[in-house]
Image (cartoon, rainbow, N blue to C red; front, top):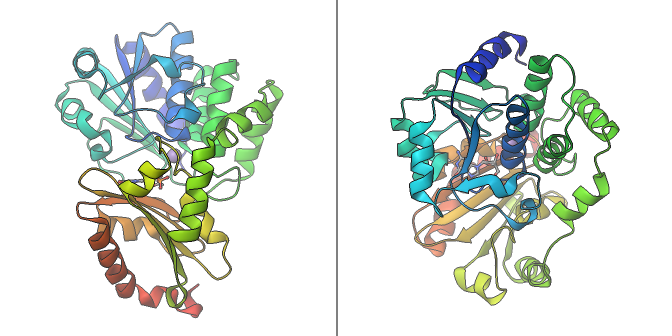
Length: 342
Ligand code: 5GP
Ligand code: MN
């Protein structure tokens, strides 16, 4: 665990000596990426800092209600404006990722910028290309880390409704509503404080988890019924969805969120993978129970990364070839599924 007070002095100095602060999250931003970005935004705005936000690509529907989400500039929608924001920033804060390729099309522009750069993150595998990296993989979410940093910098709890909601969203989405991830007693103490500020827990849960289209529910039924393959000898299950499958159910961004978790509720399954066909490549998501390190698996075979039990990556080939390659990778890891090791 990091001793945060060591970092807050420098972070505060950077915040209060910079003219134009830019907050950037990772591509395909999840609740923690957007939650930590918006939370920091609300704090800096309240301190009268000049602050802008960029996401490399679009937000998922279930996050668009969040206070300030409409102020996030989408790089692939408004490239010129985003390039200008990157050029004019003198401080760039990257939230919830540590590898620059998670910036998508914005990567080269951010790297080339002369701005001072900060990473605030909780993933393993930090790349050292920034001026200040505050990286704590013991935190369940970047939102938890942001919250603790802000509490220290602010001296007293920072009370703001949109802020409290953003931290809460980051924590619940990265722990699957306190089901997985590295949440601790401290996480619950933070949540207790947030609840006491009057956040509407039920409203937030409904907006995040109970807000799907009927098409999405049917896609889920189809995925489990027709596209899930179980490999008992490797205690593994995977789901693969082609472009055509997705089109049949009028897929919109975010619809497959959560699918990868479901096979883990099958008895004896400890490793789950989801393959989604994109244009020219396959996006992969991995989840595990216990000590199978899916971050290492994603990084070794699929140019990806993430956490011990939740990771992702990509593979530039057809769905069929990607699955074949995955099965080959699984075979190479057969020893990990030995009962004695689980
Ligand atoms: P998800 O499966 O929900 O998209 O991602 C799970 C975790 O893996 C997240 O923490 C995310 O940041 C990480 N992750 C997903 N895709 C990639 C990827 O392509 N590269 C890296 N480095 N991490 C990824
Ligand atoms: Mn996160």
